[in-house]
Length: 429
Image (cartoon, rainbow, N blue to C red; front, side, top):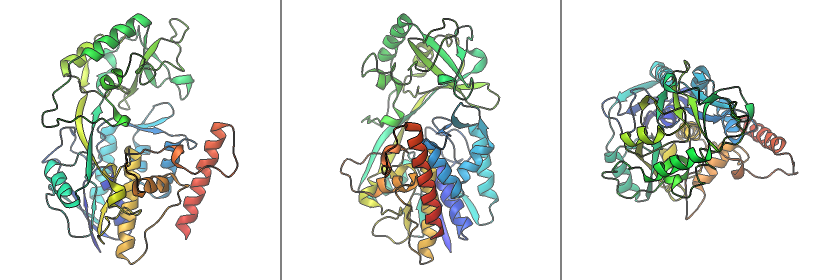
């Protein structure tokens, strides 16, 4: 049985991995290193373009529940993340180059996977999983639009990265919110005057031209900080600059606002500015972000960039098993299906890889219960919705418990355990 997978991002690698482990002969097509999107920089597979965090690790959280389900399903993403993790409090964050290298090596060394470095510009007719992601190349995106006629677009923005040695630690301090997970973040505290000066500079800074992208439609999950700021002076102070759970050791009090920086690598030599995805011009980033206490002389290893994302109107196009309606052999996976987030995209790839093999073997699709996080996400992207928007893992998309538990942590733990038990049962049927 031969299967093609287009795209070697998280979803494509997971789809190829799942299909190959099920015995299929897989050809994985990836346009890098010969061609990259405006946001891609690294030649390896599964490149993390925005944050290096895969979100919360604790199993009683939505993100942690999703990770646990993925591990049960044999996720390559989770295997790589565990091998390349960096300290990040209660989150699972990775060294992004080590993470990419690990997955690339695993894929290329799999006996059932053959890699072809080429751009696909024709709609496939063979047994195929399309996982070209939110950064699908213009020619192939146009082919998809022409064939399907229903697609949407929006924009993502990546946060800047600075060197640790350039951060003024006489003003900044190490801490995690509420002291959870150790001192894994660098925090830059603001008083009211400093915050107001920074806010004014941010909302009046010059943004980079979008060139061919004339209509800026921003998705809430990865909003540029300057766009969020323009919603009102308190918007970022209640968003990416919220000071809750932090105490400035120099004053003994909670700061008026705070910017957090998270480790970008194991060595702790690089830090990314959490939540500061941006489309400001590079010179403006240096000027405006230099007003953050402790970052006055910050050395930027990467400035924030803006890039286009695309996703399908999946409820109209895909069935609950990720297969294109009206076809028998075309599947879609990843963020382009309307799941939002690294692990969500990877999980979608696992399901597509499993289901295309099952279909070709004459079996029904693997349908996970909606009490599972993956099952709930698959239901979201395949349920009719005239205002369809991407969705990440969250407890709100899961059914309520039969009996109510008032304590939130205990309730979430029970929901997570219910989902994991349902998943294990579904896999034995």
